[in-house]
Amino acid sequence: MSNETLQAVRGMNDILPDEAELWLWFEDVVKGWLASYGYRNIRMPLVEPTALFKRAIGEVTDIVEKEMYSFEDSLNGDHLTLRPEGTASCVRAVLQHNLLYNAPQRLYYSGPMFRHERPQKGRYRQFHQIGVEALGFAGPDMDAEQILMCARLWKKLGLTDVTLQINTLGDSACRHRHRAKLIAYFEENLASLDAEATRRLHSNPLRILDSKNPAMQALIEAAPKLMDELNEEALTHFAAVQEILARHGVAFEINSRLVRGLDYYNRTVFEWVTTKLGAQGTICAGGRYDGLVEQIGGKPAPAMGFAMGVERLLVLLQESGMALPKPGVDVYVVHQGELAGKLASTVAEQLRDGNLRVLLHCGGGSFKSQMKKADASCARMAVVIGDDEVAANEVSVKPMQGGAQVRVSVENLTAAVNKLIKQE
Ligand code: HAM
Image 1 (cartoon, protein in one colour):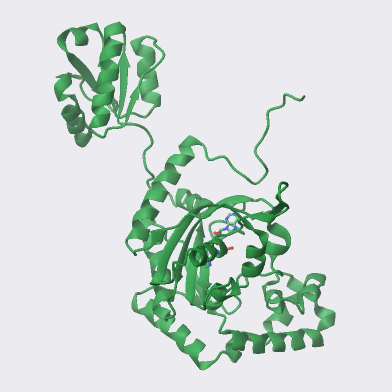
Image 2 (cartoon, rainbow, N blue to C red; image 1 turned 120 degrees about the horizontal axis):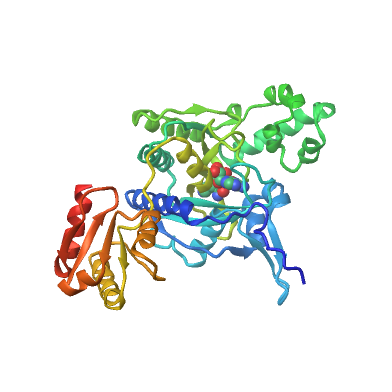
């Protein structure tokens, strides 16, 4: 048997403690932000029947065709998939538990998603999303609410380098008309299509518009536009979304080539993009998906949602130079001698009763070496306990950023530490 150190799966990352501090801080901000819009948490399994994603995302999409981690359950032969996204699972859960029976729902989830893509900066095989879904809302006010929500979060996080692109995909009748015209147009120009486009011509012609092949750009530019097929309702809906955004001072760009990589969308779609992350510049994306609930077996219900990529957002935050949270504990307790050790653990528990974050030194060593550990822990205060302190039922408190060491009674310690922290 080899004793080589085993490595994590390619494209799946460990989040080490220093970085996890940032994740925890970010998740806290996000939790408050979601609560401020009345969204409630839902948690779905990481594994779902493969058929769910095929039906929801679409058989002829990159995700379903090439990127899903699918496997057969060796015990019963079920076809299962590690979720590549959360919308399908969320709708499945809502229908399975009849949550739409009484009232519309504003829901969010967060956690890992899995896509077998080629890993690069900002693109991983296991990545994390915060997903937001509103089910049972038909009006443009919901489309605008979700876009305004995002704008508020960027502001809260101090992000300025993100821009908003929006588009409308119309309703199914417009899309059918557009699809038929696209097929006819590309059939007339068959010789100019590359292999991928030729393959998609009849299964998913809309995705040809997404092609990055430079040789096809002129052809794509001149292709029939969905905008020209939109019906009155879809146009009015889109205009209303734009009006609300403008009224709230949220700038946007209409990008008629924004079609999204999942088939369930209709009407409004949007993406928040940055130029700071290279090729993987989309930090958040979503749109309306009014047909999905029915497609997954429920009574028809409109819906709208989006998801943001946590890894991408955190890289952007780190690159934006904002002051990120300080790691570390409030107090590091150093002690020497048997009685001091006993007092130290009592004092540590007492400080924790007062909601302070405390590291109690373990493993012995001189005061000097313990103070080095206190320094490395980024603690704000060291509490020092030796024989002298034990004899007086007192402890010494030393601010780690400088300042005089003070002696306080054990009884007054929590108040004294809080006061010193405030003075920092
Ligand atoms: P999506 O555009 O596939 O949409 O993914 C949303 C976001 O997840 C992307 O904008 C990106 O920030 C992040 N992301 C996607 N793939 C990766 C990857 N391989 N590595 C790192 N980050 C990635 C959805 O998933 C839809 N479910 C969004 C939605 C919710 N639509 C309606 N409701």
